[in-house]
Image (cartoon, rainbow, N blue to C red; front, side, top):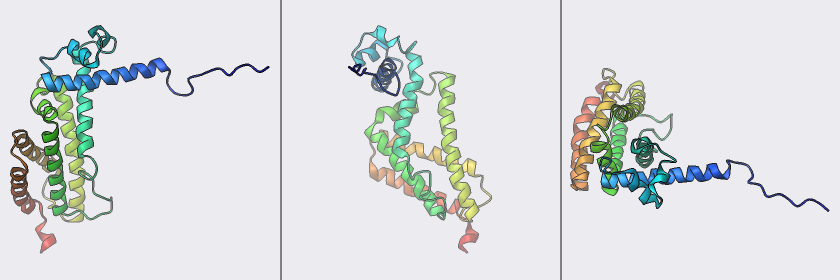
Length: 223
C-alpha cells in the first residue's frame, strides 16, 4: 500500500511570509487613505490600524512608528502618480523616430493634462505631495527632490535627442530646460486643485507653448 500523498505548500514563499506581506500592504494602503484624508500630522497609528480593522498593537508588529510607514506610503502614492503619467509621456513612440520641437511640446502638454487629471480625480494625493509632505523632515525632502531630479534627467535625455536631430537649439542646456518644464507643470496642477477646469488649463498650455516653441526651435533647421 502506497503512502498517502503529503500536502505541501508548493514552490514560493512560506504561507506565514505571504500573509505577513499581504498585511503589510494592507497597512500601507490604509495609511495612504488616512494620511491623505486626515493629514499626516493629525493621523495616528491607531487611525491606520482602525482603517485596516485591527487593534493598534498589530500595527507595531510591522512598523516601528507612524514615520516608519511614511516612506512606504510615499512610494505607494508616487507609484500611482507615475503609473498614471507613464507610457509615451516621457519616451517617444520608438527610439528611431524623429524628434521635433512640436513633438516635445505636445509631450509636455500631455504630461500636464495627465497630472491635472490626477489633481481632479485624487486631489488629496496632489495636496500631500505639494503641500504637506515637503517639510516633514530632511530625509523626505531629499527623496522628493530626488524624484524631481530623476524626472528632469528623463526629460533631459529626450531633449538631447532633439538637439542631436537638429530640431532643438544647441546653445540651450537641456538639463536646465528639463527642470524648467517640470516647474511649468506645477501652476496648472495647482489651478486644477482650485477647480478652474479644462478651459483654464488649455489657455495656460497654449500660452506656455507660444512662449516655449520659438525659444527652443532651431531657426537654422527651418530656414
